[in-house]
Length: 371
Ligand code: F6P
Image (cartoon, rainbow, N blue to C red; front, side, top):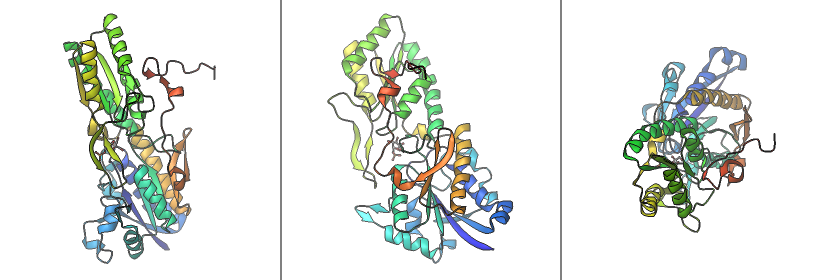
């Protein structure tokens, strides 16, 4: 019987949903019945720490090292219950302009006889995967990121679990906010995309939601806060995306560093808004950054289920030699798109469709055209 070796790795920021997908990659590739039907005996090797594992590995002695682990049904049996990634992850890029190591990675893939690589990643990791595919590596991608900013798919693993965290944490904040009659500004991740803030804000019933796709005015925020106060509201929850900014202003960066994909770290806008509200309205205001809590915890039911389906679909692509593709979810159906189709694109919120720019909140008409 033909033998074939698959390598699987997770890259970029971790999130809930990665482990269910990994489990189902392994289970599908190594299933006895499917092996007989396909006539191919797959072996799955887990690569630790994203692309870094393929860079660090000694291809002649990988079985004795710590970069690669042989995976089987037994090892991955319980993985779908856990958050994060059992393989570990880094933001290490093969094509870092400051240190391009793609040639070494491609050579290690060949030396280890990895016929295919299945990559679970966000825009940085999957863009690197698209480059490697162009450079001759058989690659298949699985989309994941709590930001939901990848184009060509309606879903990225981790998003729904992160929404659940936002709802839980805001529920917790409500009691203290109410007791003290305070405003709470809750800063949400998402980089330049407002999906997590918008859908998280809608789910938790935030009074104001600020997204990067619509520049806000401090005066309007204060006006809305005072309006709420006048109507007798004890407290308010304001959700702000880390990438949101005032009209004519700039995004707030945590520091001056960038990752190996050249991206800056956003953060701090919540605190600025809280200070402006307190000064402008006299209402006591606090800010909270939910930060990495949003990526933590066990995957929710949706991430376990879609993780499973994405994992199975990725192996289907491998079996059918459909390399250079990313599995995706579109209009409720699992499908695939070329990895190169994500190049240079970001899935952002269209404020005209999804945002009420007057109330700074989720849309208030959905079927206005009757459709
Ligand atoms: O891309 C996922 C994400 O959580 C973003 O929402 C956030 O801006 C960034 O990663 C944080 O990166 P790090 O984990 O490197 O601090």
